[in-house]
Length: 275
Image (cartoon, rainbow, N blue to C red; front, top):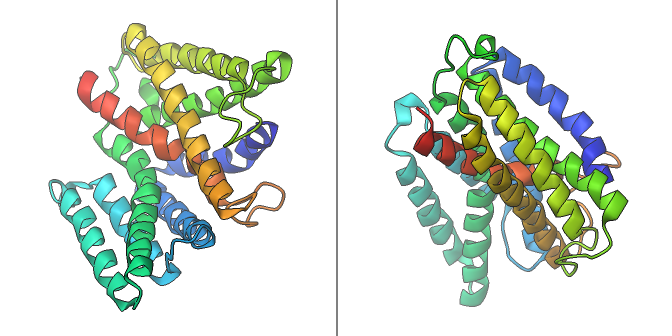
């Protein structure tokens, strides 16, 4: 967890800088992250026994990301893009003479593309974010920057709270077969920090803090699940990191794993409850 906290200092500042610039730069950066993370996911999947060729999984993930982001000119057709990815990856698997290998290739490529493509929910949240009331403390940020910044702070606060409390009190571990460093106290500390930031963030965005109190624990849990999901993939592949792209800190997938699960959760919550 200490490593994740330190690496946030590498990952988050560029993300905040591009977020300040707005679209299309923010969407372009997320597209770059998706492409690199898809390459890394394909590498892990192949090591785990699921043939996921780079030439297919990277463009497939970008297509899924476009469908998930759902820009205005594509609104209503994103699901068809994702369905098209399933068709193309299934057809590409016909080249395997062993049908078991072909099925594994189809499942691996389609899974990797959809899994990584969910990261563009960050873009979806920004494009569909509700307006911030003029009287709100964070009104000057604008809807896109305000809501995406809140998501970034939620994930970062969970990681920080989990690390600090886990170091101080964490004795009893959970899901150690996936990640031996996780502790129950770390989980509780992360949830508390995430919930506090969510309540404060909703107040700053001109929304009832009670809605933040409901969202905070949910984001903490799904952020932790995203971390564990990638850890499971790395364990299956027998690898410590998704790649060595960032010396001493692993790859892009190692840095965005929590956002892959947290971003769609926040986007759905905002769409359902915020007006």
